[in-house]
Image (tube, rainbow, N blue to C red; front, side, top):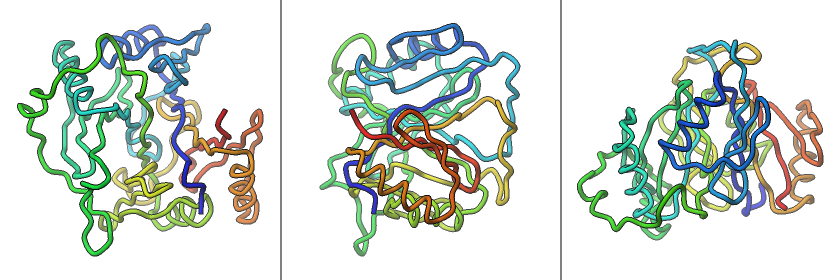
Length: 279
C-alpha cells in the first residue's frame, strides 16, 4: 500500500504558446507566475509549483489517444470556489460543465490548448456518501445560485492553500490501469464507474488519480511532443516511501528513469508519473 500521506504535486504540460498560456492561467484562474525561462514557466499560488508549462510551437494537437483528461485544482473552501466561478464569468471563460459529486463540487473548462481543467472544493469527509461501505461519487447538477451566495473569501489570485487535488487520465484498458495503479504503485481502489472508469487514492481520499477509457478501449498514446501531459508528480512523505514504490515497480519489470532524486515511470497507456519525496 502506498504511504497514506501521498498526494499529487505539480502537473507538467506541453502547450503551444507560452505567453498565451501564462495570460490564460493568470487571468482566468488566478495563478501566480513563480518564474519563467525561455520556453518554460512555473506557476502556482505562491507556495510550491502547481503547474509547469513548456512551449512547443509545432506540437500537434491530437484526439482519441491516451493522456490527460483533466487536472484538478483543489481550492480550500466553498467561498474560494464561488470566487473562482465569479472570475470565470467575469473573464468570459467558456465552461464545459459543472457537477456536484457528493464528495465535492466541481467546475470544468479547458485552457487555450484544450487541456482539461477541473476547479473544485471538497466537502468534509464526514459528509461523503458511502453505500455498503463503498464510496459513491455521483454527478448531480450544481446549484449555481446557492454557490454564488457563499461568502467571497480572499482577494486577488488563487488562495495559498490551493493544491492539485487529483489527475484524471485517458488509458487504453481499465484492467491494465488497475494493476499498475493499485497492485504496483499501491493506491487503494475507491470506486469503479461501470466498465469505463475507476478512481484510486492514498489515505482514504476520494481520488488522487482517475482513469477512463472514454477515448476508446485500446486508444494509442499520443505522438511524442504532443500538446498535453508531459508527466505529473506523485509526492510521497519520505525517501523510504519512494523506495518502497520503486521496489514494487522493479519487481513488476517496469522500466524506471531516474530524475534528480526521484524516478519516472509510465503506466501501460504511456502516461508518465514522477515519484518524488516531499521537501
